[in-house]
Length: 93
Image (cartoon, rainbow, N blue to C red; front, side):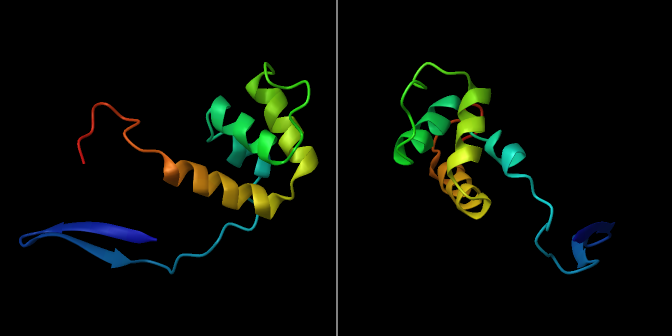
């Protein structure tokens, strides 16, 4: 965790405590970061898409929780979010 301090020379960052993983991350909450199309793609990759192509986002999340372990879901969510490009029209990077 970093603390930003403003001073005469500008802003400095000071480490308050080292970063560590959250041991209580909920896979269901993590999946809500994904868009519906990304969830559907994960369900398809898991081979569990039958009857779900027009399902709601909540149903897709529920199905993914049934078929994939939490650590796999976490890494797949990270990959999907990192793969997004040009999704914010108001930001030029």
